[in-house]
Image (cartoon, rainbow, N blue to C red):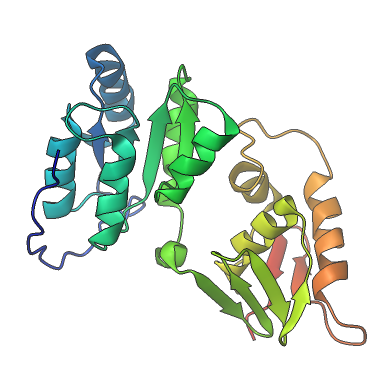
Length: 245
């Protein structure tokens, strides 16, 4: 099915979910039982949810109304979820999208993220995890769709998955890359260990662990230069901060 023609989207000011207003959620899900459970759960957590049952309807609404976050099922009538997301991105709609799917293979997850999804949750899922993932997406800064990140001498290409310092390449493991990306999106901000465990490792129940400190140490050894101050600063009793200057 063809997608709706492009229409003019008036400039809107996003409503912060921390500013007292309920976050606006667009749910595109054709399973009525799942949709009802999601709506009830999220509304109990003070989200404002609009539900659409088809991909075409979800796309039309998503193009012409502001939402803080979207939940899109992968298999939808009239227009599949990945095509819906790809079209939103082509039309420069950069609202965070959580993909729902019964497909759980790594290739399926990768295709969902490559289509423009920001997170991927497989069915069946716990409502607590769905809510936690939405809250994590809502905490992302407005630059979350930039493909190049630059902080001081560091430069990260999110498409090529490369990192350089003063033009020299740095070889990072996938978790180190994700950790550095999280830090580079928030330069000058104090980030607690709990925040890092929740948003980088996706822990929902915080264990007693030195996992963050170990990975920060490994990352420092790769990105810092001998004789120069470390780019990642330890903030006593609080957490870590990537030096912006």
